[in-house]
Image (cartoon, rainbow, N blue to C red):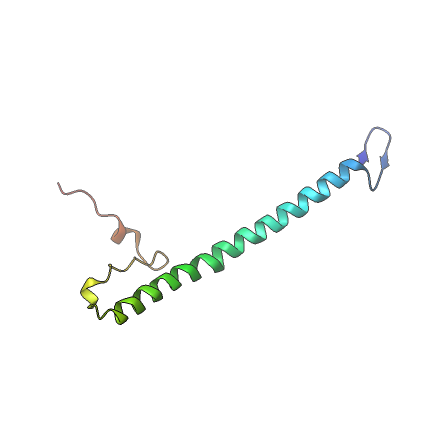
Length: 87
């Protein structure tokens, strides 16, 4: 705790303990959200795609029965995703 009026610095005060726990929770929360976003979500989407492909193979379905592929947002051009209304 920094007291500018009395020019003192105190360690281990209850207010500092609150900020310490808050900072730790924030850091772990950001790490968990990052892991979900960058690792878990793409893995689950790929697993869903692979399971659907395997199910189509086991059920002897043709590729015409497969759902259309999703566009890859990282490599897609925005002009191909947005089609203006017909005039």
